[in-house]
Length: 201
Length: 177
Image 1 (tube, each protein chain N blue to C red):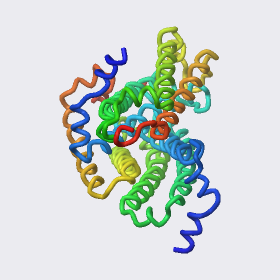
Image 2 (image 1 turned 90 degrees about the vertical axis):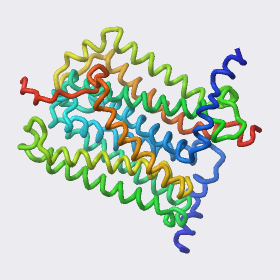
Image 3 (image 1 turned 135 degrees about the vertical axis):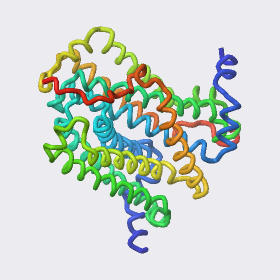
Image 4 (image 1 turned 180 degrees about the vertical axis):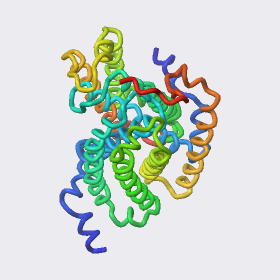
């Protein structure tokens, strides 16, 4: 506890928390958002490709996204520690904070599994459509990042609001996925061919 | 003009929805974030390829992911409009017009969104997108394309930055003062 209080009272931490400039706390938050975008964005692109959208995009070169994702992860780890340090005890005492950390841990583990099982396996890379193992990893990736984003965003709210929002989010996603069956996704450019695309080159 | 904008910007239905259901505002925030990640994430990947930072990806198929970025924009725009028209739910008694007129960060965000949109139009309507389409996996993009890509990446990241600062630009607080 004393250690946590000591962290909370560090000069840098106090400056971030209390300085009356947008370059302090708000900017650290913004940096955390940038890291999030570079971590989850390319991951979503890979997941979409694995599910069969943009099928002519070769999967193998998307392995180059991983360094970008790792940069995003470490930017967030660093900014995350700073943000946590602003109020360490409160965060550790908040359940949704732990949910977020677990979700991110699972997301990163999932990333490594994707790297090894899909990108590290020529059988998987060459398969059209991607083998089921790849699709499962893509699906869990989506799920973990969604939970992490939800947990991060609802951190500041009261627990009963967090619970209601979780349920509302689940319902929203379910309804959206059901509606997707009836919306002409092709006209919006969001469709994917149901037949495997033959190798063109 | 002011009275027209005052009338148009405040939506009591959205205000009621957001104040009546505790999950409405946080859900809109989560959707807003997800839309941002889809939009800026996919656009960033595309821009980094055009800039030459990421090689090995043919550009024509990469463009097939852009509709998903647009879907992300639609999610962010819808939730964003809910925040604007329903601000009275979060800050009781505050009118969207007053927020729009006094919050510098909101104004900068909207300005840079407009610039990013103009940049995108320039990409598609000046033929640059056609030259980029023809690029193979390891080809270098023409300088014009790189300029547009660099501008796109910078502009969207600035939009995110200014957007994050909006709460700190509010001149009005709960209660209308």
